[in-house]
Length: 291
Image (cartoon, rainbow, N blue to C red; front, side, top):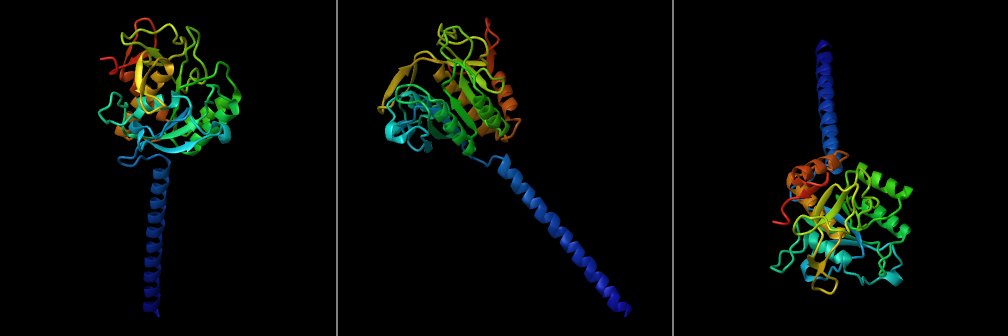
């Protein structure tokens, strides 16, 4: 009888031990998997960049294979064809393929999500922009490039930006061609990286905004792709934004920065360390483009 009891105790202890090992092993596996899904970047995982703009010519030879998804929140029966080169030029600065052409993007480590929010007449409808922004967030992108802006703030814009930043998405926006007035929205927000333009001599052109401008990058006579399959020259803070987006994408890719609520501060600190302070402005010039 005593032997049976001892055997039962041994089996019971062994059973409990096995269950404990299984419990903590499964729990640890699930926890690791959950953390991986939330923030950890895989090796060689490309950075997802949403370009909210006029649409991108995905058939341009220098953008082959770069656009992985497209979304058009505007009436597709009217806006199915992209007539403006703005979005294509932004994409070219960020990641034009290194094909020995005159234009090569800042980074080759991205995949683009094209969101058409600018109509063919150059105007932006608020609801279309909101829907496009929501879609970009739903795609779990890493960066949202906004080479555009609004003169007046509105509640939905603030809510969208806060939601994106809380999810670890970096938002880079044009300070605007406001001719010496303050930056437009959402560039004026503290949790958005605001970008102004400089010329080849590191001078701020007369059209670039003042006020809340975090960093400056090339924005005068910039060579990039056009919507007809060739290249053109562009000027404006829109194009400066694309340079900064490319720099950030390279940083996220090379450093394997986890995507969480700390992403913005990490990126901002990196940009500060990679820039030089302007003599007449508190903002910084990103190094490496005008040399």
